[in-house]
Amino acid sequence: MGSSTADVLASVLAVLDCLGIEAASDKIMQIAVSAETACDSTLFKQQAVLFAHRDGVVMEAFCKPLPAIDIISIDTTPYVTVNTLEFEPARYDRPEIETFRPLRSLLRTAIRNSDVRLLGRVATASARINERFLPKPRLKEIETIGARFGAIGTQVAHSGTVVGLMFDAMDQKTPENIQRAASDLTRIDFEPTIFRH
Image 1 (spheres, rainbow, N blue to C red):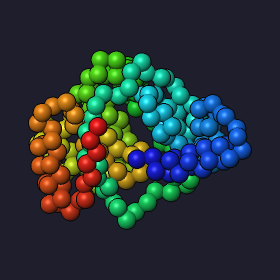
Image 2: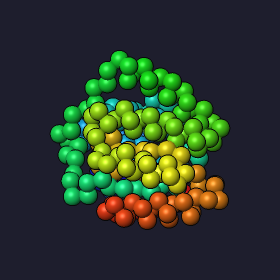
Image 3: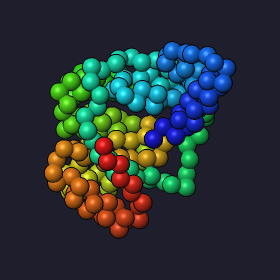
Image 4: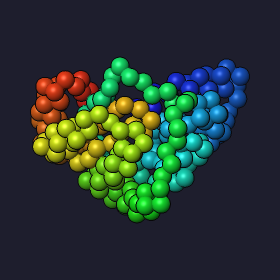
């Protein structure tokens, strides 16, 4: 969601505008990191980037934007917040770090080829790694519903409580599948929100 980053960026951009200062994206992101210890790539809405959220640095800018994806967003614990200022950064072990290398290559391929299914696999792998650091309640139930209705992957907030089921926006069955999945999620007491590309 990037809600805390959006708030910080809005403040930084407003102050810069008020002072008549133009700043490069990397400088803006470094200011945001200094304000909240981490931020996401919200500023880069027109371009897919691999972003070092604790450093405020773009590690890789991809050649194309992300392919069209529809998402069902589920806040797994809507009345619980994660204090991002106090949240301990993930400390990945060697096997996890080694897993990220091929995932980065697969991500590059998925974006270059507009392959939403591969993108979904990469997001799901990242979500599973993150479970060790910030588990999402009832993730398996959510993923089961997604699989039943053709979700291409699962994405999670790495410092929050949100899970997203990813769907191929170009698939003609997606609108109906999203409605059916959202209905099943509602039946088990979630309040899903649908975002269409």
